[in-house]
Amino acid sequence: MLRAAVPILCILTLCGCSYSYDVQARVSDGRLVFEANPQWGADCVRHVEVRSEENSAAVVWEQTIAFDDGCENKFPIAYGVLLRGHPHVYDSGGVPNMMVGTRAPSVAAKMLRAGVIFTVSTTTGATGYGCGRFRIGPDRQVENLGCS
Image (tube, rainbow, N blue to C red; front, side, top):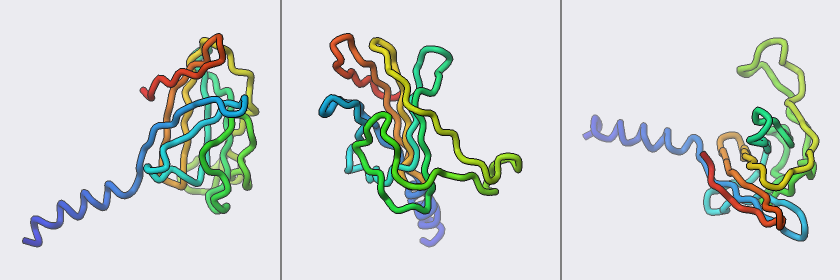
């Protein structure tokens, strides 16, 4: 009986370590915002990155805050608005020695062009990962395309 329970317990333990969720883009009060379904437990946004699928997947906005700050950033997150909290600084965990003590990359928001497909990725807490793709039409309507 114990032998049969061990694999089940291992699977349940591994499933609880991380989670993924869809990120949707929409316009609210004239601003582009990103949101996630709260049923997935996606809160405490720590990292957000938006890339253009044009120009070799150039980053058009990126922010990362420290994991030890309070949960000050919750969905919806407005494009280009600074995340609250201290910037993330790399420690010795899994990065090359030359990066220890340096800040995580940050890219100021760039103008988004209509018709271009963008990918948004987020990290919530330490183990939640969100992803979405969207395009802004010529009428400024947002079309969500799912994550690939």
